[in-house]
Length: 246
Image (cartoon, rainbow, N blue to C red; front, side, top):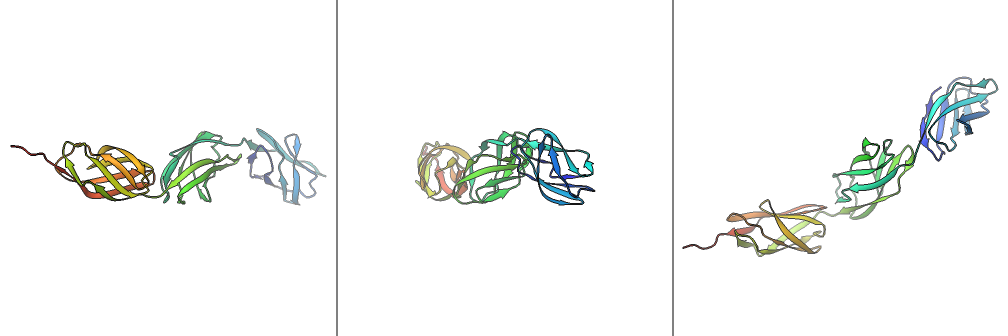
């Protein structure tokens, strides 16, 4: 006598179908000590709405001919989502985030706003999920499990940055030049490099940041801006110049 599904939230309300033989005229379906609501019945199946419960309970069907053998039904506690890491990423999606919480082992989907992704269950307390594409702005993230859905966490979709120019375009190999980088979607900048060497920087607004060139070797180098929305590269945008000698 199979039962499908064999698990559901502790709040009840799950539609459960029990299949077997001689089930016509079912008068009761018990989930432990509680009685389910019968919604459909044939000689080979009974469909019910399960009552609230907890833990593992025996399910059996009673007809005029007696009571069936029992099958196990598992009540699953509601999940809790605690954190997302990172909590922001590119609007194009494709990046992987880690979601931590409790009761996540039966997760079947993770919704980012109107878009849904299938998670990889790492443990009862951790999921890994590839973020679907979205639109710039905040999206509610919820996890659906056999025990229900989590309260939402917030995830920020960030547009990909562009870098259009630097000024000045050259400076001494010793570094220390304050360089203004212009572009778009620079607010969430996480790093700036000159020829692969990290520079200290400050974001002024979404279209401007100032970086201090690190020491480098004479010649042109790429200036790269990394943001939560992606990477923008200006090829050979800044040239290191050697000082005079006699």
